[in-house]
Image (cartoon, rainbow, N blue to C red; front, side):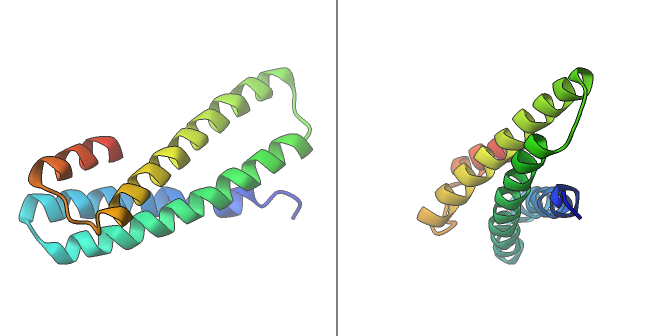
Length: 114
C-alpha cells in the first residue's frame, strides 16, 4: 500500500476521544485511576497523531488529485495539524505537571481538550 495514512489515522481519533471521555469522567467522579488511563490515552493518541499527520503530509504530495479534492485535503490537513498541536500542548502540560492539576487547571485542560 503506497498510502498508509488511512491505516494510521484511526488510532489517534479513537485514543484522543477516549482520553477526553476518561478525563471528563475522572474529573466528574474524582477518580484518579480514570485520569491515569486518560494520561496514557493522551500520550499514545498524540504519538499516533504524529504518525498520522506525517503520513498524511507525505500522501498529499504523492497522491494525484483534482483542484476540488485539493481544497478538501487542505482543510483536512489543517484540522489534523490543529489536533496534533493540541495533543502536543496537552501532553507536554500534563507530563510537566505530572498530571497534578488544581480543579481550575483540570477545567482549563478539559476545555482545551474539547
